[in-house]
Length: 397
Image (tube, rainbow, N blue to C red; front, side, top):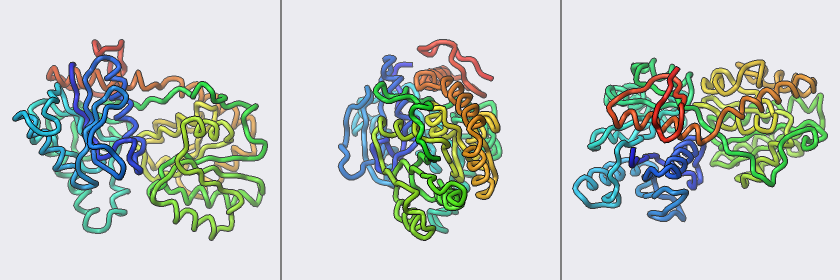
């Protein structure tokens, strides 16, 4: 495979960029490092350049939240006739990211298209309003599976693959390549007894948007303060739901127990994780849960909801953390870990071992294997485990 075009509605520089954008860009950067020519087409936002080179990739931007889709399709179509912002892009394959809505690149592309779906958005669509939520879910659940009935699908976890089959996607066209994780910055101390806070300390690492349900972590802190009056919660991340969360903290009377750190550097993120006792991830829906692995790198177990689907893959229940089904169970599970240092340490160390199984290089190799197979006219299915790099042979399970 010589060249690939990546489509995503946002990039990691966008104020609302998150894990799905991170996945695509880490894969793109790793592929570029292996000699593949990589172009990312995405939207513009305040302060962004129309185009730039970053991490070995060429990034082309155009359009906003909704217009990014038609603008990208026009750019792809124009490139076929030798003009437009993508006129020099001649991909062997296109990876079209469906964050609820796909670009429908297959309608205008002259090359094979892979549809990247992190998870289905049924539970998240309501935040878009009644009309848009119904339209969005119809596109995601009915229109897209029919338009892409012959395309290769790519997702990040087995639960997400299972969700796709419920929408009518054939399982023999769904490849699973789990996300990687960055190495801990060299100047940051790895989580251990030496870095842990002396008093109970929880953390949430997340974009601050409604479906992440950070409120459940706040309620857990309010309840746990009766037993652990010095418990602290670090909320790491930013987003448009920040003010409602601050209001919730005030209403619960826990201002002294919660710190909103906002967007932080990688070094600061890992420093905060290394201090934590337990990572809480109360998200309504996740495709995988990269934050679970990042916390695990520091020996920190995670408590999250099994109903979020993706966390059933990133958390081994009862081994590397706890999967629960309600806010009350979330609070109880966190309290159990705070009260039992030996269990917390054992789970954390098992989580650390499992975190070592994931890297962005392996992830990029897996995606590269899928892309190379599609370029050759073959579909892959199941978990893709690269046998060796440079996309020579893939093993699926």
